[in-house]
Amino acid sequence: MLEATHARRLFHFKEPAATSRGVMTTRESWFVKVWERGFPERAGVGECALFRGLSAEDRPGYEELLAAACARVNDFHAGEWRACSSVCLGMETALADLRHGGERRPFPSPFTRGEREIEINGLVWMGDRERMARRVEEKLAAGFRCLKVKVGGIDFGEELEMLREIRSRFPAGTLQLRLDANGAFSPATARGKLEALARLDIHSIEQPLRRGAWRETRALIADSPVPVALDEELIGIVTRAGKVEMLDSLSPRYIVLKPTLAGGFASCDEWIALAAERGIGWWVTSALESNVGLNAIAQWCATRGGELPAGLGTGELYTDNIPSPLARRGSALAFDPAGAWDLQTLFPTPS
Image 1 (tube, one colour):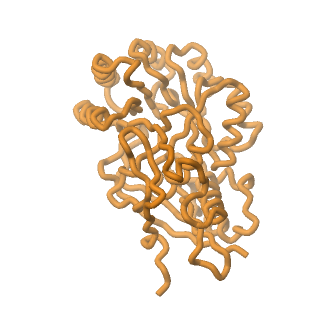
Image 2 (cartoon, helix red, strand yellow; image 1 turned 180 degrees about the horizontal axis):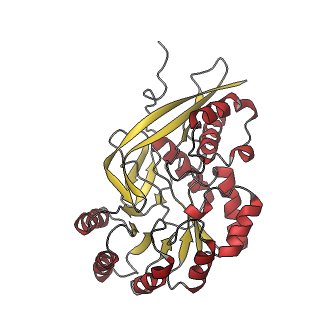
Image 3 (spheres, rainbow, N blue to C red; image 1 turned 60 degrees about the vertical axis):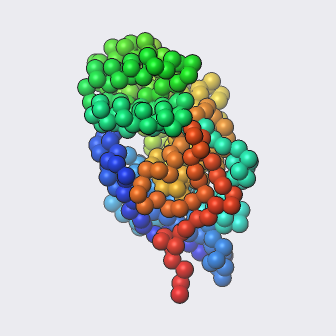
């Protein structure tokens, strides 16, 4: 018989994290712990990283929803909880962790044995041009060969000039540029912006138009000189029929899988299968989780493949992240099998 509990934690960004949706200085997250009755020392832990303003389940009563999932731990089925994406992912992680010994290795692979690393992109947050340029330099100095740059937050002309400067120093053969607009472009101006960007050998642009604007998005994808990747568009689509409708209606070049937002791991497996049937590429991205959630997503990514570099965070976003065996080595994410976790602040051991 299984038992489960949950806890809340607030994380603080080292620097304000800006997107076209706003600026974040803190990030709230929830955690679940699952164990066999009578054996609390051997437990699985997962993160339920509700993304305020973006998660489909961001509504009043979230903690009650999480408590209900914990109460049903013995008959938890991911398919029934996909609409509560972050809860589903946390429970999937905790249960998989418990099945594999409660050692934070829910998806064992050469990655968790320290034999393989995952190539990742460097993320450049929005800011004024000077700040973004500084962040670009930091990522390049760290050895990243793929940059994901958030756009749509400042004057497009300034963004374009900054990207031109990057490309003048690093041609496409040495540096891949991915952009993420977070829905900031308007249907009226998107085509012109993409034409300007296409001259810079841009790998792809994520979510140029707002989520839900299917008619405009379909037309833009069909005629875009820059490959379009969809990520926010996947949020809230949890049935197979809904996924088929979206993929067949919009026909994106890529989809970007954020398990915390896209229904959890089993749901993302379904997205992968449907995308493969249609020749649509994909890669995995984290969504500002702490090291607990990042660890699970990275381990799952290591067993699934997808296009690389993956968009996995490095655990360096927060001043008070949870110590873990994850570490960035140049432009790759690594797992140290001998590394230690410190979950005492989440679930203190009873005295």
